[in-house]
Amino acid sequence: MEYRHLGRSGLMVSEISYGNWITHGSQVEEDAAVECVRAALDEGVTTFDTADVYAGTRAEEVLGRALKGVRRESLEIFTKVYWPTGEGKNDRGLSRKHIVESINGSLRRLQTDYVDLYQAHRFDVETPLEETLRAFDDLVRQGKVLYVGVSEWTADQIARALKIADEMGFDRLVSNQPQYSMLWRVIEAEVVPLCEKEGLGQIVWSPIAQGVLTGKYQPGQPPPAGSRATDPSGSGFISRLLEDDVLRRVQDLKPIAADLGLTMAQLAVAWVLQNPNVSSAIVGATKPEQVRDNVKASGVKLDAEVLKKIDDVLGAVVERDPAKTVSPSARP
Ligand SMILES: NC(=O)c1ccc[n+]([C@@H]2O[C@H](COP(=O)([O-])OP(=O)(O)OC[C@H]3O[C@@H](n4cnc5c(N)ncnc54)[C@H](OP(=O)(O)O)[C@@H]3O)[C@@H](O)[C@H]2O)c1
Image (cartoon, rainbow, N blue to C red; front, top):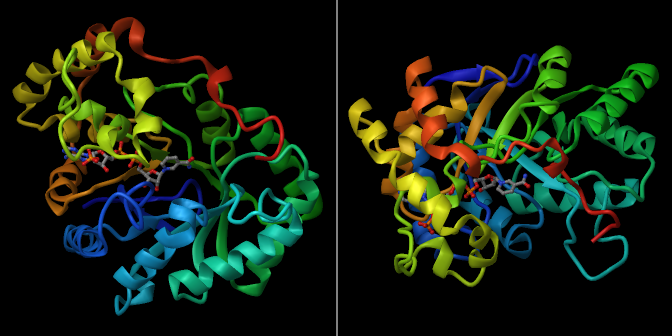
């Protein structure tokens, strides 16, 4: 496993992180979840990503139990706040009240005194940015959070936050967590150039497009048994990627991966890591073999000719529109 700085910060993260959205506390039983975490640790993964909202807060509990006994200094634990964690009107968003209550819940469930990175899971249009950033900064001063970042914010939202942080003397954002894969490149036009200039790193999610870029979903065929597309908690999220035109083109990537001696999953993860603004690719897994497969993408270099072949195969199905980075227009 190779390691990179998280943006311009001093924090090192594993190039490949392990995330537990849809899996822990939901799609997979606890013993399989623990086996995946063990496989990740064995392979040199030190960075683990979760969120208060995953599996209705159960995912943080599962991760906390799975990491119990591991030397805390050897881990980077990331979590997030924004999406609803309860029925109440204040159980959501980025108000000072919810941020303070949510971090306390996350620390309890993760069985740790601090998280390495605390991320605003979306932009909250109903809270002044100053309120959110001061609350984040307070958590840093209290030692509950070491670094702060955001997820799926636009370049303009990130720029506004940096300006306020500089004016008010708050801790600066060190990272953004966007969706990024060969199929979904919407950060390249605006978010990445700003983040490169300002020293934020990308921690990218769904680098394998939720399993689609493994090539296991065949055009015109039902999804394979046990895959995310057949799971009640996951099928809604992956369905938009399962169009025949996308799946046909993904099948055409197979010779490119084979020529390089890579699996399709490794090619997908290696592809996002070619972007120097990417600090880490967060992979999900339902089985330890998947973790062992995916981590081998660390350190792989893809040359310009390979990148061009990939672009030629995927053609028009690649999404590049920066307007696709969106947060809800009202609090969920
Ligand atoms: N910030 C955000 O808004 C946001 C949103 C989404 C995710 N995330 C983060 O990103 C992490 C990763 O997201 P993701 O799970 O969608 O990423 P992904 O790595 O693109 O997809 C993971 C899924 O693909 C399948 N898979 C993975 N490796 C495979 C392999 N080698 N062979 C065959 N199938 C394989 C598995 O599902 P099956 O076995 O079920 O097919 C696995 O659960 C999340 O856990 C979370 O931490 C963040």
